[in-house]
Amino acid sequence: GDVSAAGLSAGYKQLVRSRQEAASVRAEVEAVDVDHLNQPLKKISEIHRQKQGIRDGKRERAEQKQKAAKAQKKLSREELRDLVFEKFELQPHWHKADLASETGQRPTDLAPVLDELCEREKFGPHKMEYKLKPQYGGGAR
View (cartoon, rainbow, N blue to C red):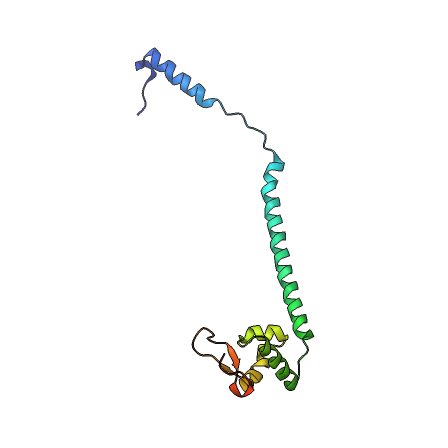
């Protein structure tokens, strides 16, 4: 219930009055800098532009790879054999991917020639590398 004002002391009435006055005072409203609010939005749009730039860069690199792949001259089997022999004169063991990058040929084009001329090491320090078959001068090294 309600408390009648007649039974309250003067000190208590003064306390309630001061609290009501303090509660009725509103805080001043500060003006907000609108430019400050737009900055995070600008940053988000900059991030979006950067991501778009990264995507464009990836797309360009992929297109360059495709052009380079088309530009590679596919060698005849005999030319490729000669080239493989030249590379094996430089070093005795090759990974297929390394040999493909050195010769500028695709690994799929290189595979039949490697199967014909080389044997793949299955064990040891040159595991999964190719070396010339003994009849082509790829003896024990």
